[in-house]
Amino acid sequence: MDSIRLLKKYPNRRLYDTRISSYVTLDDVRQLVLDGEEFEVRDARSGQDITRLVLLQIIAEREEEGQPMLSTASLQLMIRFYGDPLHGFMSRYIERSLQVFLEQQHTLRKQLGGLISTSPFAMLNQIAERNLELWKNFQQGVLKGGTLGSGPTRKKAAGPRGAAAKAAKPAKAAKPTSRKPRD
Image (cartoon, rainbow, N blue to C red; front, side, top):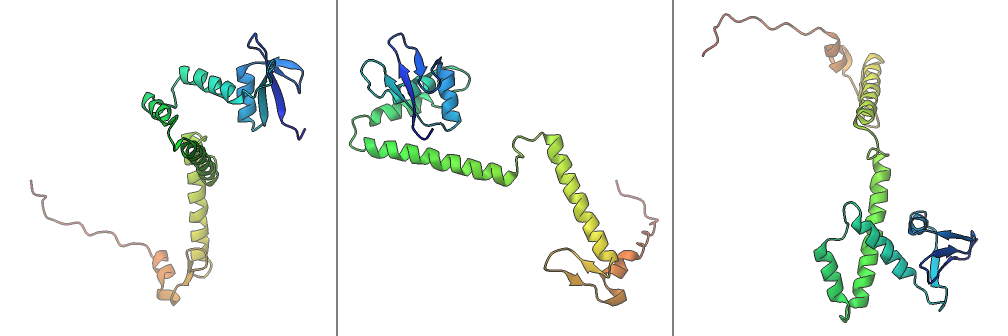
């Protein structure tokens, strides 16, 4: 399966997948792209590589459905680059920009630990559980000999008059005032 998957396009506009010996749709080809499967589309008569044309057809169909990714202005700008001496540079620039964007998107999703796809309630629950665990650790540290915080920068409380002793004392109630509030 190391070889590139071959699809043939026949004059009746049908696509034939030679690996599975079956006709496929553009949605099937799109799924190959999403799955990262390498493939090539060849014209059945001429043998010409028409992969780009099929991919453009998929993009055109997706642009007609729902929210388009390519604005009219961006398409016009792309068309203006055809025939320009920097045409090849622009092609590589767009390709590399998309690769970098996808890499950053993958890294961000990985760092967020799936929070993007998590419901707000599940996310709040995770935050609450994390905060509860931190609070328990803090309380255990205070009760076990007066250490505050966690991690490498722990500080020992300074004897009975330290922060741990102060935390154990009840707070004094505020004295009531006899002044009337001003209007």
